[in-house]
Length: 341
Image 1 (cartoon, rainbow, N blue to C red):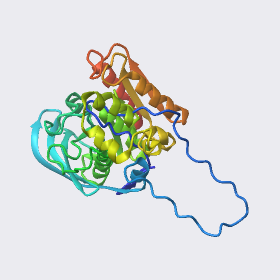
Image 2 (cartoon, rainbow, N blue to C red):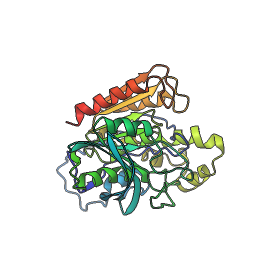
Image 3 (cartoon, helix red, strand yellow):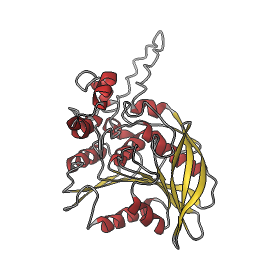
Image 4 (cartoon, rainbow, N blue to C red):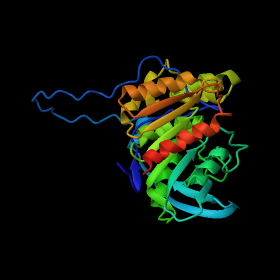
């Protein structure tokens, strides 16, 4: 299903809420979608009013009518024989989000990729900082590359509640990026061929996006993603460092023991049955930042839900990929070539 103009989100949240990666452990298997009620032949006296979802949850994002528009090319930041690099802005659910865009030389339209970077402290982040190798390589391979900065980064608008709300706003920014590309009307961009690529925290955003807005992208890739359970990311990254944000999060949302329903509602594993897009996960066996076990759990959950998912465990590679980065990018580009046709 190709979504245009607006996207009625479909469920999923795992926002990496920590430095480098983020998440949280939760007992039990993913909660299945409720079975349809049996027909009894007896009409109810009144139709019960559905309980609205927690506003900080994947179901809330699913119900929201997402918007993305106003893609604007600004200054030329670089030009070479393969592509031109621009500063850009676009609108996502009422916020202006900055980023960079690489547009290949030659005759388009070209397939487009949205890049979702990993955690970088917003106080030190500069526009386009994340995934520089991938930005260059994918543009040279004939893709329009839109690397989103996210809210609260670089020249983007501010969202003061985003951190305490598990950074779910980043998922909105990625959805808005795809819609802005699709609605841009630019001749260089093929709005019918759009993929999503995230690494580390951005890999968690990939999971969220696939469950919140199934069908918005044609395919997605995650490199070294965070846990699909936000509380696991918090325990792994933030709590050991004494991050004061942990207390704020638990004061507002409760702990997993106090409010397990909330924490189920922010994990994309709970809504694995929502995914409709093929997904490739690549994760190094020597990653000591985001454990490979996190990707194994996520891949198993999506596979158990009957989804098109592939996990590649990359022997000896750490979190950022080194000697095997080029080979894994070959795999990534081949994956997108199969699905962005």
